[in-house]
Length: 323
Image (cartoon, rainbow, N blue to C red; front, top):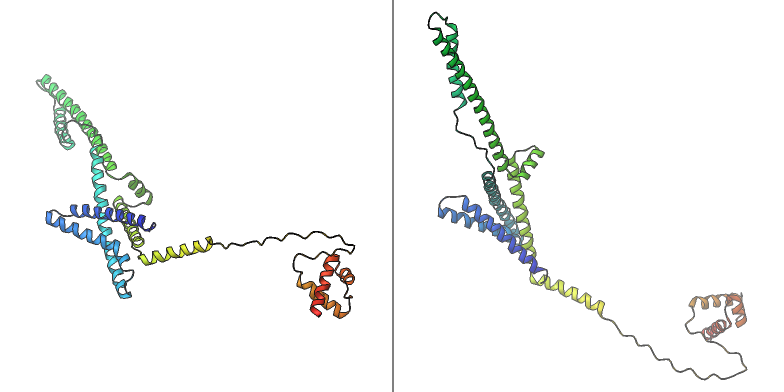
């Protein structure tokens, strides 16, 4: 149960997030209130089906699992489409907010460049006509008109230069708006991959949707594991722990007090404390039967190169075996 509770909590959070995205996308996908409610209900059903169908069809027969798999793929596609709609709309709204915060250079009201150039053309034509005429009479008036036409042409040239500068400022404002409207990471990835920003936005939205749906399906699969399986696994772990923890007590028998030493003129014989190896007995029997050694303590000691006590013990064991 300790492993299931975090998975259930995460599954509820993932499903709640996906349902919220589907609700917002369905609400913005239509105009009338009834249409919005229907779109919201469709999104909730599709998201819930995409998350719970794998876990619910786990114990179903093969035919039921095949039908569930087909329906699950359809629910995943529809839910991912709704999530992609949410991501694209959210990026659009974020771009509009960024555009509204971009500083814009103010430009005064001005005429269009085509109008200015048309006026300049007409005044240039009049100046050319004035230059073509010869001064026969009233020369001061002719000179004054010619000078005024030239000054008017200079003023129109200055106005045309200002209009061009205003157009450059407007182009800069438009470029800053376009740059601010797009997501900075998406714009750089699009330029790096050589694809359009709109295509990368769609791919990113679908990728986020697929990851969210996959995580939610996995969490519900883990959270809805049958209780029998979890209890059996827990019992096996407890049994293994009990086997390793259980120990058997071993009692060591108390040693009897050693008897008092008795002085004797006979040589003391030390008995071995442990059983002798069987290989020595077998080898001694084989060598004695073949006549290689004599069945005496001295012969055994000389043959094996052992102590007096071990040779005596081997001699007694041979006597017991041959008796």
